[in-house]
Length: 472
Ligand code: ADP
Ligand code: G6P
Image (cartoon, rainbow, N blue to C red; front, top):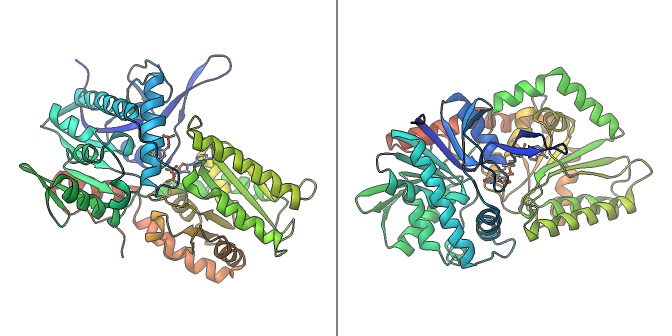
């Protein structure tokens, strides 16, 4: 009989993706996004199993060990990837949960596969969990798993955490399967969200659409009480501090600045290439500073790193084309020979290279139109022990609830963003240091370990879960 685990994480993706090179050689690479960044260090410190998809279709992979973790692959066919992952998860739920920035697709065929695949994940988790184990289900792709798992294994303690925003009633009620999703989540003992608003939205929706009795953070379901609370996620601050103190990383940062022509200001964006991230809006604000002749080539360079993401989903393909057009046009107008005003990289980097980029950047530009948290903002802050950088941050990122001393912007307001960007570029060293010191205090105290501990303590003991929550 296979080994059972006392602690199981269930997520759509494993923390590593299987990649095959030109010679057909297969290897594993860290998978993208904030979920993996946050959970990997937590899991490395606990001995547990991680149930997830290895990242490519029709791949049969045996359980294996990587990054010091025990990984249990769940197979997805090409059709599952199309209907469950690209379809219901990323063309229905993702836009619906992010303020309907793009129009969600509501199709029954996508829903049916979402249900079927959620059941597969629930079965895989039921198989690997030891008697009375803790199972922690992650994110919007698996919202039905808590209830399905409870039916299979009533002995388990089940937690669920949503990494993205949870929409208000006015938007959520569009979803034809709204009750199914709510009941799916209610299979958990504890449902965690990034923000207090998200947790209240959930409780209100349970009252309204499931006719359930609620009291404060609690929802009464038959003979059980389900708790909904907020647990703002964070980064492994110590790991980043150590990385940023490494002389190799610091030399690389100096080299990057030199390669960019040592401009007065280096601005940086690091994102998955996603329409929620406000990449076009931030570039527009930057380009307008040249249009207005407040900047000229040599004064400032924008480095935008955009990891390829969900490339088969239509909205993502359109976005990529639009950004590439925008960058090309801006450089055509304002760059000088060998000195583009925007350096755009459609690729992903190692943690070392990212840390070097953070150190090289005078202004980190994080302007999502909506974001559950945004770990990039916190990573930047953790890396800047020198207190010299400035953070330009959208009000619509969960991180803005904690990083009050960032230069806050409404990314829909291009004029306002442009002026704030200018202000951040020209802030005095003393002002930058004051702001950065206060933000660092928050990120270092409320790191990813405290987040996990707060959630898991609340799950195990049924206690209040706000220990890691915003100090507001
Ligand atoms: P999301 O979860 O929506 O992708 P977050 O900002 O919360 O957004 O998390 C993104 C994570 O992915 C961060 O840990 C960040 O360092 C990492 N990341 C983003 N872009 C890149 C990139 N180009 N190369 C490597 N890692 C990246
Ligand atoms: C966000 C989501 C994660 C997701 C990640 C990367 O962080 O909250 O659930 O894994 O983006 O997206 P992908 O579709 O590549 O898994």
